[in-house]
Image (cartoon, rainbow, N blue to C red; front, side, top):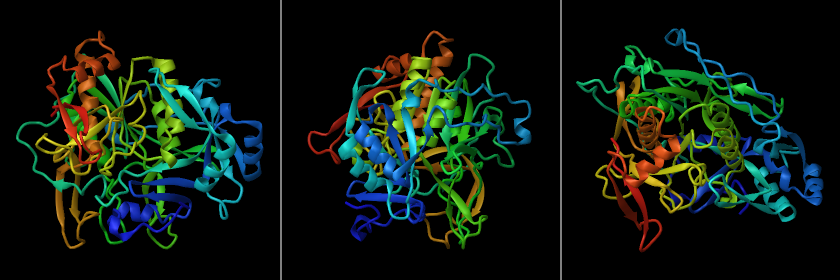
Length: 487
């Protein structure tokens, strides 16, 4: 199908975020019955190591090389300034090997983006460029495209909303949800998500655990990385709180609740802006990120025990995400089994593979329903997932807000006082990240993060594990996943 076709009404209304994102001129999209592929209209991802001479010639006719993911200049990571971060220190950024896996992944920019788009050009050039079979760090084969569009990710482009439904206000519990930070032992979790929002009165015990840093996005026109804006209470023209605000804050609290022996670094990735006003720069929302920006953050901040990635997206023709495959190869070469990477399966109620969760070296987490006796109505599910846990009706830290919420009637006024319940695979995955981190910390360095994951999945820990089968997406006899009863 050609990109940007109209999505049939019978497939249900899109979420408010998806409606805005799909109308952004610099994006293109490809609709099918089981997902919407979104990509930067003018940008291509190229595996230079597999590019034949005829394919390179054809590529140069329509696009200009921006650089490799190992060579484009990157500014140092910066704290999101707040009095509550006084005295915080950052581990140095990891710098990619100039001859390593990321050096073989290039980004190219179309010369005539008004008349060409990355989806059509990727498919056309693949007839010359083909694909390449490689081995993942764990030894499994991956078939990677030589040329692909530069994919974008929003938290959920389906009719279910963002991430799967709007948050609901919840009351504060009598007992502290997050314990005071513990000196030793400790594990570090890096959270790649919307960012973190400080509130007043504060989530004091959580604030004391969290270091907040700017994400970065790639400006291909200027050939450099730019700083993301921090998360905040962003609203549309109707005054509705957007469906991403507070997403990272919710996840940070959830991890700290389950894993008291942790400290967190939250990387805010929500800078790619969508205009909501008449070309007024102040009337914009950061509603999506690209696969390159997310993979870049994962590598740059890989000095952690666990990386919790909050994004999931489908790719053109279901090929693996090239930037994430290279990022995982780089991380495994550098850090071995000393870091575990966890990602949600996605909220499209689909069996289609979503990335990075479907990569062999990423722990992909689906969601059960509230009772834990079946798949949550929104959750993706398939044998490409590694496990499942409850992501429905999850309780955690949130923001203060009085007003309407995206996805609900504008006349419905909600009152949030720092706490919420929320649905989504992006709230199942952090539970697995937390359980891994807690095992690493309490082993006092004797158990690596990857070993901790293997113990967790096999039932060798205090976490109860049983099998859960769902056939509603894949048909009889269904796909069975380990169900981890966490939190």
